[in-house]
Amino acid sequence: MPARILHRDPVEVILMGLHESHEVSAYEAVERLVHAAETAGFETKVLLGMLDQGITLQKLIELIISKDKCSQKAA
Image (tube, rainbow, N blue to C red):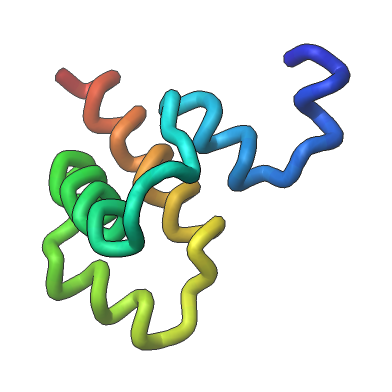
């Protein structure tokens, strides 16, 4: 990974990897998050439970990406 990326916020690095921008509404961002979680294999109810229990957005995104990568390797 280039040195300039290593010093960025982890969420920024993840968003760059997903080719996402900050130019979306909050509703669209939540919809994308739920869709990504469902695609990775999380049920919406489980996702909401994690958020309700206080998981950080950064940790949630990392879990979604990790689970999605595991799913892709298994396929």
